Each structure stands twice: as structure tokens, then as C-alpha cells.
Amino acid sequence: MKHFHLILASSSKYRQEMLKRLGLPFTAISPDIDETRHQQESPQDLALRLSYEKACAIAQTHPDAIVIGSDQVACLGDEVLGKPGNFETAFQQLKAQSNQTLYFHTALTVIHGWHVAEHQPRIVYRENVPTICAYRELSDDEITHYLHTEKPFDTAGSAKAESLGISLMQYMRSDDPTAIIGLPLIALSRMLRDCGLNPTLLASK
Image 1 (spheres, rainbow, N blue to C red):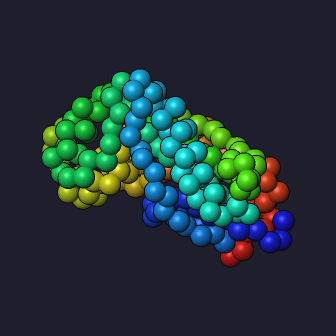
Image 2 (cartoon, rainbow, N blue to C red):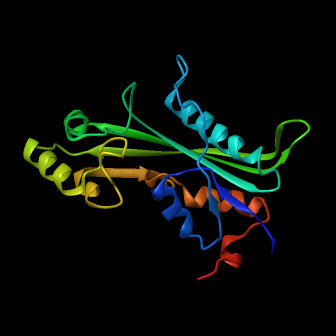
């Protein structure tokens, strides 16, 4: 596929940086959707639904494009963790995560074309890529120093695994090491190939 229009349905700088790794030209557009969790909706279903709704929101106004939607939900037990937004909330999140296991559900949707008349996607690929993060026992001093150093207040779970936050972990397990950052590139590359867009052959420097 020589001519294509690839759109990332996201305003996240982290997802944009991840997508740049594939070397494909793309446009990033922020979707306007309601991200409220439905009653009794599981974390994985929430992530899948939001990734789909993000992609649909952009695809319906760009019917010839390949649109990528992604969403990540972090949960500790049954509790869904949001972005802390400030030091105090981040401290409480990490304190609760000490010696505990956190689950990240990173969902991906790729829509290839949109039926304008039928108001629905032509082709849809969807997948949830889970990541298990086991935190070691964290002291108050470690949590405080980490938060002052990295300021991960825009990150659900209050730790950036792609940088210093990795030092808080006992182990991490996932089929895709990029999923934890918010955009699972192994799954995305497979979906793009299914759309006729092979990053390995089309990437530019």
C-alpha cells in the first residue's frame, strides 16, 4: 500500500512517541468521547470499548483512513486507578501498590475504512494486551523520592515503567513490552499488516 492515511485517535504524547517507532507518517487527532465506566463493566471491557469508541469517533469523519484507537486501564484488585494528578494521590496509589500486583489492560482497535451510509466501520481489528506488574515493598522515602524525581502525575498507577518507575517493580509480564507504555506495537504491527500496511517494508528514517 503506497498511499495511505494513518490516524492515531489520541492526544497522548506517549502514544505518539510510540507510534513514531514504526517509522510511518501519521496524523494525531484527539477524539471527543465520554470515558465514564459503565456499571459492572470489567476493566478489560472498559479498555476495549474506549479504544473502539476513540477509533470510531475519528473514522466516521475520515472514512478512507486507517484509524488507531487505544486505551489503557490500570486496576488493583477491583479498583480502577486513574491518573493521580498530584503528589498526594500518587503517593497513596504507590503506597497501596507496595508488595501488590497491578494489572494493566491495554486495548487496541484499528478501523480500516468507514461505511458512511451505514454509519459503521468496514473492517475492525480489536485486541486487549494485558500486563502484570508486581511491585516490590516500597518505603515511604522511596515513594517520596521517586515522585519528586519523575513526577508521574499523568500516569495511571503513578509509575512510568519506561523510565525510573521500572526500579519499583519486582517483575513484569506481558506478551508485548510496549503495551505498558500505552500502545502495543507488536499487536498494532500485525493489525496494520492485515490492512495491507507493512511497517517493516514501508518505514522511513
